[in-house]
Length: 552
Ligand SMILES: Cc1cc2nc3c(=O)[nH]c(=O)nc-3n(C[C@H](O)[C@H](O)[C@H](O)COP(=O)(O)OP(=O)(O)OC[C@H]3O[C@@H](n4cnc5c(N)ncnc54)[C@H](O)[C@@H]3O)c2cc1C
Image 1 (tube, rainbow, N blue to C red):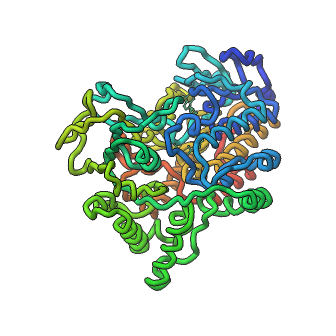
Image 2: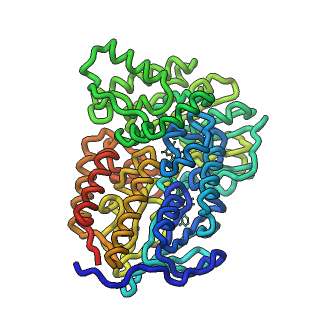
Image 3: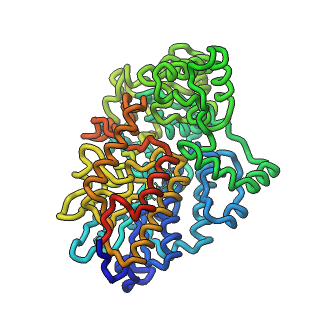
């Protein structure tokens, strides 16, 4: 391929106060991914404009302000690793810090690296179209303003498109109503109120155990029980703080070696290789340890072998029965239709004990589905539950949802939404054929979707930055994967997924969302080969001159 002479140099950027203009790169989203991408591109001397729908930086940690929102990743394994100074000066107060602290951290990062001057807030991108003649993207905001750039980089989040339940009457409720992913900035008081929570996924579990502390009465509307495991959070004392800071290189190294970039590395043994007593003792140990160890640090075959999976599923089911006093309630809280770890495992703090409280009631929606939301509360097929507050913990249109909400058109006006209608097709989860110069951080089929996400964000951003630097050095204006490379990667992703037990279960991992029309067909959104293998493949592709990509 002959490189073109012209480089994507800075072209008349607009002033920081004017969203419109022409840039080397436009980044959509100012969460963990967007902030780091801005930082890296600025280092290269690229002109960058970031458009962010929210009123501040932080993404997930800006929007999800619900009570109880906190990490499932160990705090010190989650922060950015790129700046030793940042690592040294930032003290995480808890092993699994709460949302306000993470938001403060990201605000601190934006301040420290002077990132805000290139970000335009309260600016939702409505559409983006590729201009084939000029090798650039035109982005239109909801306000109607437009901007252009050679490269369009999406950092729009795997869990950032909130979904309301598909139930009639939602608008009719006269009390207070909140979606956890769009929580208000003012405090919400539950004292003495009748609160209903719809949804018992990872977010629902966090919010329920917190709201149960003060609500006058709490009704939990559960459609699918999950296997929840203890978080076992605790404050970080001064000595541990010193130790963390002294061992950051080892912490990050350990993350990078593990399948999902967590501190927890799978046990090399298979579940059935040990005796029943050893297995039980191992599960007890994991259940008594903080974080995702029971999911990520378990026997290496629990997510691929049904017999192995049955043993840990039975163990967690027993724990639920031990912790919930009423056997009927315990049974309703016990998953029977899927195995442990085949859906996102919620981590909890005294979640099951909530159901032993007199002021808490569990409503099983499999027995009595919600018929409608009424002005007074929630009506199931059995009765009307009068409520003062409804909390919708109904999650997100995961991974592809934030893409679907933007009208993205590539070569020949092809819509990304249409291209991905039967499941995403990508090369490395970073690009799609027919969409030149569109780079999708934490996109579908990217290892970042099944990861301690910032560790994978750093890899994504650094890889994309190196690609753009490579293009600039050689005068290329356009990068796009070949159809063959895309087909091969997509087939590889599907092949890897097929051995995983989670492909036999309906969940957001599989693109299922019963609240969204059309999202009822299982597709493969995740890359399940593990972050180390993904990273190695990306490095190999780069080392071979970006094999599989057409550079022009
Ligand atoms: C409650 C909760 C807890 C979590 N806990 C963990 C955890 O413990 N460990 C972990 O690894 N991951 C966790 N995650 C996943 C989390 O999303 C990632 O860790 C990480 O924050 C993703 O960063 P991001 O920058 O890719 O996306 P986000 O943080 O989601 O940021 C995307 C940004 O893009 C903006 N945006 C989207 N569309 C548009 C548009 N059209 N125009 C303009 N702006 C747009 C959004 O407003 C948002 O600010 C959690 C997620 C949730 C919801």
